[in-house]
Image (cartoon, rainbow, N blue to C red; front, side, top):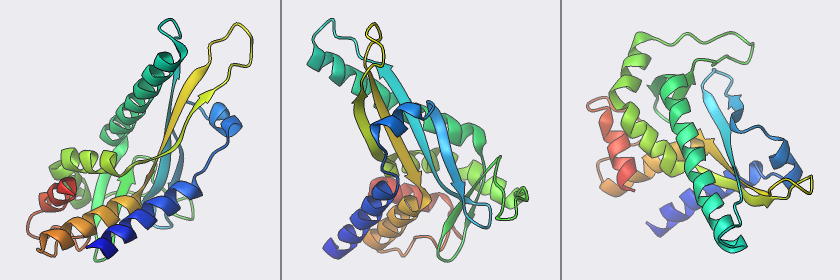
Length: 202
């Protein structure tokens, strides 16, 4: 089990390093969901979501910073949750992967992906559990104060999260292995909600 946990940790670590940002890059990145990347088959690969909150120092610099950080983290997760609700249109469980499709999914040739009724129905069945699972798998790649550029502007606290589908797949596989039922990315042929439920217990 320790080896399995280490493997999951490494997956998360690699994902976070790949999306490392400087303060200037974070400042210039718009709030909301961005940097959306797709795999060659049009399935979602990764995305970032940013939230920025002004730091109110009326109660002290430290408390103002802590409050802004907490609010920014919450707001970023809310925006990701809304994106999943509004833009996710289908999911596919394959032997070694789980694929998510959005309204903007295109393949490597720029062709828009049209999801099947089966993919849409699968997502509809487990959307709530999938959302919970994704929110557990997101990683924070930036959580810092962004200094003001003008003397009369308040400093802001920015939080940027990254969602990499590899992290969710890893968590699903781990959940299946730990539960001893073999449920993982082989998909929910008998019960599609089992994957998300097991992953949520992880």
